[in-house]
Amino acid sequence: MDDLDTRFADCLHFATHRRRPGEPFEPAIVNTTIYALPGEPQGQYQYARWANPTWTALEDVLGLLEDAETLIFPSGMAAAAAVLYSQLGPGDQVLLPSDGYYTVRTAADKFLAPIGVRVRTCPTAAVEREALDGVKLVWVETPSNPGLDLADLRAVAQRARAAGALLVVDNTTMTPIGQRPLDLGADAVVSSDTKAVNGHSDALFGHVASRNAALMAGVRDWRRICGAIPGAFETWLVQRGLDTLEVRFARMCDNAQHLAERLAQHPKVRAVRYPGLASHPAHALARSQMRRFGALIGLTLASADAAERFIDGCQYVRPATSFGGVHSSAERRARWGEAVDPGYVRFSVGCEPAGTLWRDVERALAAVPG
Ligand SMILES: *Cc1c(COP(=O)(O)O)cnc(C)c1O
Image 1 (cartoon, protein in one colour):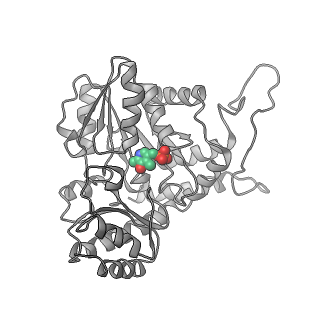
Image 2 (tube, protein in one colour):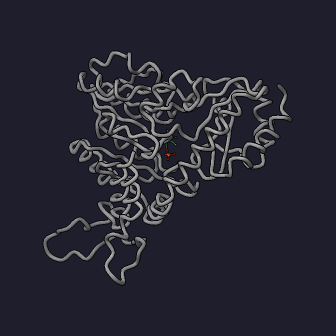
Image 3 (tube, helix red, strand yellow):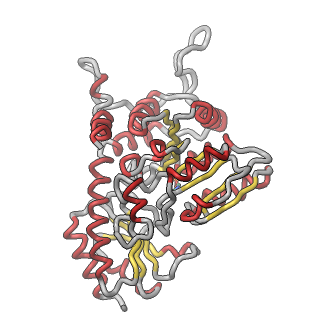
């Protein structure tokens, strides 16, 4: 962990280590579509759909954090699409999680299947046993969303390699602070930085990171040609958010552990899902592949009504979809038609002081039917 701590400190000081006297400490927001370009085109800055200095500043830091080449996108889905659409073509087979982020499956069904990509799905907890013959790309999200099941990344990476398939991990819920799929053998990581990486619920964003140069060349071409590019201002917001990622994520995960342990003892709570609890079916795996256990808790209350009353009754946990922000939020996932218990609440734990948060949750639970 010491090596990673040094890496996190180097990320924080990436820009400061490179500044000459009199230069601004912080990266500039560069709004331009064109660059001075006399004679034969040269250098990386020729046209702003291809490159922008504000992107470069963030990609350098995210790349150091991921320990891999990194490309940024205007949303998590734009990052996911760049990987899927640049790597898959007619006749290929892709294996997606049946219990992962829903829109990734929709994107594959709507735009990949019609061009002849065979789209298969399997549950996250079963992917390490799934037959991979003929599969070109395996997509894993661990913990899964919203069920918080785990996949064994080392085992899946080994099997994917043996089958000649690429393993892509959507690491949104964990961030590179909490889990490092590339170090466990994944070929690429996709992240929705809309969530904890930016962390302030004010910008949609995403990135792809990989040590596979051919894969990244495809992803870069996709962005440059199809134009799924982030704005300079959003890029700067994420750069600013990233400076506090390590401290925010530590606080969020500490809070989540604190709450999960107490929720598990509470008489109004039927079940708690959190990888950091010994009761999680894959807790041993969580200990071996996750640096932190994350900021998402799944809790099941008696009914949809109990869940809604719990969420309404909290003062510091606000009703919203999404997760990973500094403010705690929660929602009943069945409201999106997901195959979960009607009383299942996905609780995104934020940065509020732990004691205050628990007192709030306890008070709201007291008013809920059991
Ligand atoms: C939110 C999310 C996405 C999509 O990200 P956007 O930034 O909303 O496009 C992808 N994967 C996971 C796991 C997510 O939570």
